Image (spheres, rainbow, N blue to C red):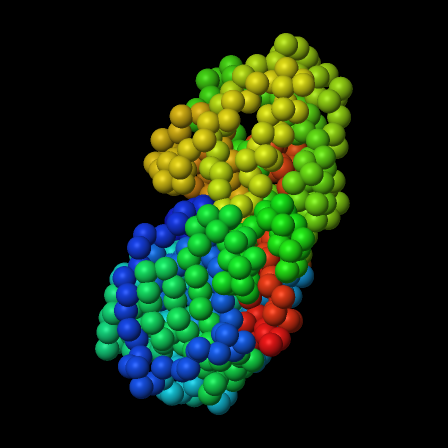
Length: 525
């Protein structure tokens, strides 16, 4: 199989999910009783039940392989664990694997944690890892979003009860970070119930185990026999699609934590009974040019024009206004802490005079107009950010008309190339892989229906993906980041942050790349 085919299989649709699915509220979730009344934990004592408000519950319920992005990750990571974990600084830490080593260019050995049990008491061992890899690399498993993200993985084989070899199709020096996404299911439960049945009655090794699905609530109990048991007795995950409903849930003490908030939302919570939390996201928001939509003589075909758009936008101004200065202007398609980030690149400075000069040099002293399709929602201040960009462009004579579209239309555009405008807003997200090349699988020739296809950078990406030496891979990726910066196939906006609201009972809240440390949270009386 060719490298391009592997990459396309690896993340095209998964990237769409990471960037877009959090904007949607899920359809009604059927009520499903997982445990009998006699085995359910007592959750009436409010001080022992942690209540989390999210945009939606997973449409696929408890199948952890159906998605890796927002907001499903908040439900899945309560129940399931990967072999590794990532910190917000990009470090790879042990999780179900305690150590790892590279055997050769295509093989890694992972030593597994002992004395770990699944929610049903079954032991975790190498067979569970092999089962997960076998499924995700099978014809049946390739429909899963996680399978596409793990497209580089070829096979797994048990060395002994607590060691496993994982082999890859191509050199994968970043495989330990990628193993954060290999969430482990209990093989017996999956085999007995099948894919759809397991989604109703999921079994993992995480801090919480499912008790019951309701239409808008997932009830979970503490996995007290687990290797990192939580400090509360129960978890309730509440589906609250509207940001205002999540704010009110904190103010009324119906929820202890709410996620996907705006800065204003957290300020409202702080002014009342709670506080806010800011965590880093491994993503960059950008307005990407859709080159197949452009005529050969369209202004956006000229690199000077694209650079002018970047000079024209006062990114720090809207970051201060809408994000409290907690994030930074973007300089490239990734963020600091992600492998391959080029720290020698500075964001385009705000220089409207330079923008006008470049436009005049390109032959457009009076500017031009184009349409940008954008999705807005989730409480992330996207609307005001896009509007601020449009207002700054207008000052140099460029009219960017914002056309709001539903997420479904965004996905159709990405999958089918059915665009109506000449640009669109979307994240370049490296979450779950911590690799700057991950979003470029969408934003390059590798995509099935590419909106940006430059054969020069495509060859650079191929070379980086085939490089087995991690230092050389890093250098090649940094060169790619520079190329994207200079060619400006997008208006680089800002690096991502996540705002959450916390109620007065919450102690020790920590979130790394949208993974909540559930086992560390405490609730005061």
